[in-house]
Length: 93
Image (tube, rainbow, N blue to C red; front, side, top):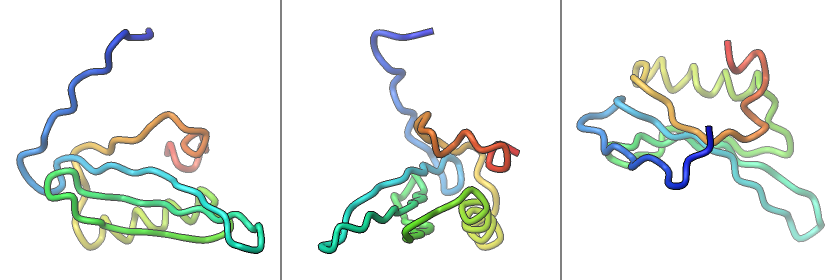
């Protein structure tokens, strides 16, 4: 169901209540593209992990998330867009 206006984003009350994750991309001066995966805690805007490489397959993202969870514990929620990066069966599991 498409909405005219998105829901208002809830501001978390504590760490690990909600994390946001997203991909960014850019290009080097020689034309090669690279990607960056970022995870932040929405409560204090702390950067929890940044992974940068020419390719970031689902297994690499899972390993990065597991490292953060070992260190910080699991969040109650993870917020992301509906980008094609998140359609991997591995990542959904």
